[in-house]
Image 1 (cartoon, rainbow, N blue to C red):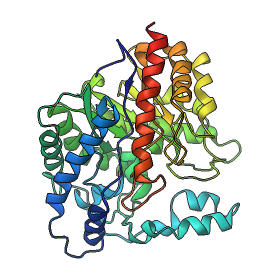
Image 2 (image 1 turned 90 degrees about the horizontal axis):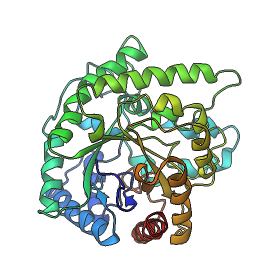
Image 3 (image 1 turned 180 degrees about the vertical axis):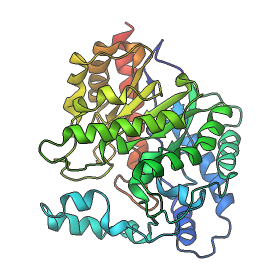
Length: 382
């Protein structure tokens, strides 16, 4: 993994806006209809998204996750065992907040992408269904790079715990058995990405509970559950070099109250026990920007780096580059400039058809990220 040894490098969390015609094809597939030309359009969309990242000045790029209906539920098409009832209505942050903010929750529930999102429960043994899918993604990304050499390149894959959060278990006897079955099934995808020469980013928003409400006195239970998920992730990543791994944790990429989010301070020591050497997390939105101060008290372990979000992924405001630079400098002054890569809070296309930030604005925000990193680098390397 390239670190910021000469200047602050820039990256993002993974998902980027999909072209409208690709969205229409993916909706058709999700709804069980014909989607002629889907694979060809995915390939051309990867080329487009690679070009736009490089044009924006991003250093560490990916394929935009354009082949996936979502960063989490895509595994239903790659693994067996997911033929159970859809659990969209009863899961996620709306369930945590519906009693406090019913009108807001109802408006959010009407978002059109929800009606087309598929989240079936696990109702059978998990195994490989389409082991070539990750190889197609790798081939598409490699072809899109076309010999160009960004500072680094990564691909994403979902963590076992996040799959369990979205695709509920109705088959395995215990939550732990379900997690380890998922870990076994995801290991080939993780290894394939690393073996292809790309960095692997494992998406782990389950580490925060995705906005889960922690009842009074139950923080210890939450931390014990997190410790188990870290152990499962490390099991799934066993044998892969930590320096080729990064992970993303967040509290859910949705514009809402987030008043129940567990503080970063309460989970960071456990997160550091995960195998990946770099940790991406939210640092720009109004609920979590203040948490940069955690690093005044919690020392960054040897061999770890951080990828704080310095642009928000839920707001159409375009951050001023000087603000981006200020955010970068806070972290660099606490953990060392070489240990900071500037990133985004979360993805900009986490679910197909979900548009929180206008796609045109996304690219301007990424340009602001690159310009802010340039300003910060001038000060840090002056």
